[in-house]
Length: 338
Image 1 (tube, helix red, strand yellow):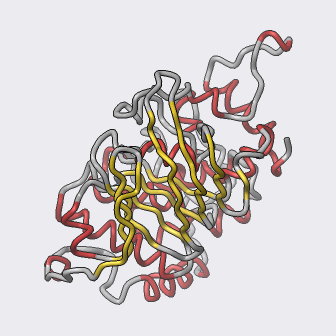
Image 2: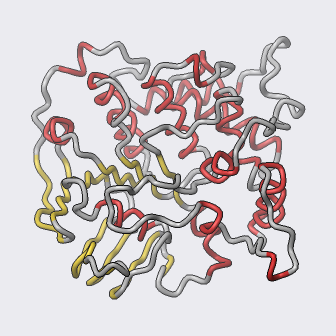
C-alpha cells in the first residue's frame, strides 16, 4: 500500500514541489500518474523511494513509515520495490540473463534460486529467445521488457515505472503497458508515471493528475479500447499474463540443454570490469543522477543514496572503482544485513 497524508515538499530554493497532497493506492492497484514537466511527479517518486523526505505530512509505502525509517533500513525497504527506468539502464557488457541475474547476485541470493527465477521472469516478458543477447542486439521495446523483468525478478510488492514508454516507438508503448497490466493482474501493484495521454485514454483505469504540486484529478475512467493492439506484432499473447505464466513455468521446469551455458554457476560470476559505479547502483534500484532535471532541485549522487558509509572521516577507504563499490554493496546487503 502507498499512502501520502497531507504531504508537502519545499526545496531549499523555496519552491513548493508538493502542496498538502493526500493519496492512497491499495495493494493490487494499477494507477497512472500524469502531469506536465515540473508538476511534481518526480518529487513524488523520490518520496516513495526515500530519496528525499517530506517537509510535512506522512509517507507510508509497503508497510514502512518513511518518516521514521532509519538509514540502515533503507536497503531492506527498497527490496520491496521494483523500478523501471525510462532509459532502460541496462549494463551493455551483460546479456539479458546477466542483467537480470545481477539484481539477485548483489543481494546474495542463492545460486539455485537465481537459476530458477531468472529464466522464469525472462519467459514471463516474452524474451526467452533473447536470453543470451546483449542490449545492443535488442530493439527498444525488448530493452524495456528486460528492464521490466529486472524490476520484477525480486518479486516486489510495488513496481514504479517512470515514463517506461518514453524511449520506444509509439506502437510499442501499448505493448509495454499491456505487459505491466498483465503483471498487475497477478497481484503486483503498479504505479506508472507518463505524459502520454493517448495511452491513458486507451487503457483507462485510475488516473491521478498532478498540477503545480497538487492532485487535481483522481478518478477511474473507462478506456477507449481502440483496435491498435490487434495490429501489433507482440510476443505476449492476447490472452495476457495467465498464458504467459503457464508457459514460463513450463520452460522453467524443463532441464537446460547441454550446450546452454547461461544458467551455470560460472556464468553467474558476472563481469564488472566495464561497469561504472552508477551501473552497479542502478541495477539494484538506485536512481540515475540527473533523472529529475525538470524538478527545481537536483538529486543526490547515487552513492549518497546507498546505506553504506564510505567516508574517509570514518577511516574507511573511499570506494572509487566499480569493483570496490560492488564489494562494499555486497558486504552491506548480504542476506539483508546492515
